[in-house]
Image 1 (cartoon, rainbow over the protein chains, first blue to last red):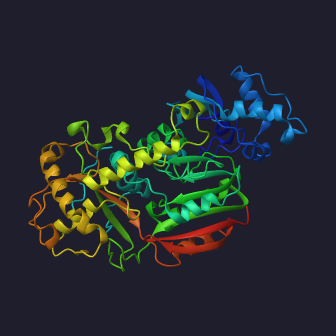
Image 2 (image 1 turned 180 degrees about the horizontal axis):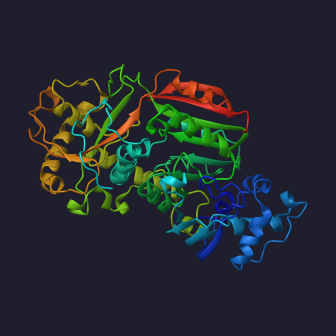
Image 3 (image 1 turned 60 degrees about the vertical axis):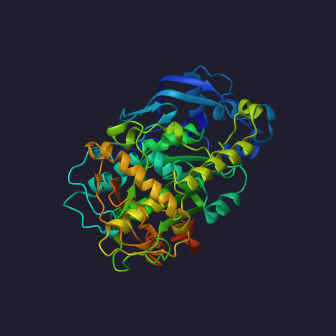
Length: 123
Length: 372
């Protein structure tokens, strides 16, 4: 699972509607894998990403490359887009878990694949 | 996973479901089945359907999409200018998807874990027909619409009641079981299809997004695809793997149906029949040779070792008369014309942009018009 995907995810346990994002990453094993840069994708992501959550998540994983706030010229700032690419598209979570800050539900990541299934009573 | 009282009729028939909750029904007649048949099912799913391919290829570069019920992820690499995330209820299918380098997760279509309105588009191919009630089918469409932004488009495919291809369904019966017959001996012997190794999976049409640079140094991915496709086609010719025709199943399944239904239908004008008549024979013998391991299996979910009667239809008269194979019955709701559109409009959140019929499926493209 790439870090960009983590930024899309929220807890979806029934009734868990507030403070359910971002899921807190724990016991995480990371892996870098080079990928082709797609500027169109990165620009499109600029207004979809919850940037603050991304930066906070990265800091907990000792990834300190992103500026604290998104540059005003982000869409045409090559240096920033490079960093963003490396962080959100090339950084993979191979294993670990994601914990909801609200209801504490644990979502396990194994072999790079998060299990987001809920028990029947949680749906 | 193990289920009792499996259904023994390997042909489409009215889904006279016992007293179970919708969740239990879907667990037994959809989720467990796909878990068990995942490797075999995946091997028949490599050719993108043209309407889906066209939809994905006309999406602007950089768009972000969700493939809800992605199976082995065969659509995720179709347009490498897009970023797509796949999800499926079957962890075994998602493992295959993940091994191909795709972004993939296990989750339920009625409870997607994504933030609202995140996606520019979504696809849901041959998924909604597995939900057991109209309410759940509408809920599934609503959940897809929830994660797509206003203005975003969604392509949905569902199996059609009116289909006239390989299968000829009773036009009065929309809720059916459709059998899937495993034709290969599971690697793990009597422990059931679940344990089959994914490694055998052909990698055709599996170009991952964000292709790894190191991989591209080592080989040309296009070449690799051609080669692996050829391998698959070769295996299809040999009868090892059956090629995908419609949403459902293998020709083998068909021939078993023909064998097993009393006075069953014959669709001998199916284009596959002639080419496959020899390989069917081989397959049936294969199945015979593995029948012991299957029939002694008690853990295969919803599967039943099925003994066939003497073949009655001409084109399979040379086949071995007694055959056993595990048959998995999947639940389907067959959509009649206009039904999908009705469900979509019930959400009050989307308009129909385009609709059609292709390969035994009704499909439509919707555009999200309202959120909440």
